[in-house]
Image (tube, rainbow, N blue to C red):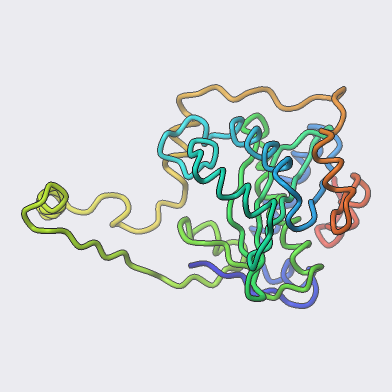
Length: 268
């Protein structure tokens, strides 16, 4: 599990990041701004399911659409239905969606949920057409800004890919997974075969430590051409405009976004 402890000010979290990470984040924001005006919006908690449809459309433009094994929502109707219920009815876990926009079109988004005084980053997606500018990086910055603004002092980035989450200041609790099988079952025989294979051939990449990248994402990007990045001329999706206009929603135009991330320094 990877949890980011947050100070009372966003600048304090930003300043504690490694120098190289701050340099990369500034560079990636500049690359994103070179594609067009960068703005952002957030829905209120329990905004209804319309913003989720926008998220799912973005997910279909991400690398996850080309990886059958990815943890994407749009491939699993039961999971989509579960999140719709949470977003429509609310409950102990309060969910909202946060979007990063270029030319008023979503290029990155997060589904975040608050529970027990802690914020959880549940799902994220970004437009593969903007991958060279790493919009997911700027989305993390914005999400941390909003988390501090909302008074959270802990952000749970969830498990997996700890190498990336450490770069954002996460404290990682190492976990292990225990699987129990009947020895004579199909699953038990497959597990035994896997154990024998590892003894003969050595551990695979996962057993040799963190790879430093997401292999599934790299494979999906290698075999599929990205879509074009969003261009000017399209208005903001009315589903997002309506959600951001509700009490508890927020919308940042390019100037307001730059003020929110002022500690990063200038755009040039």
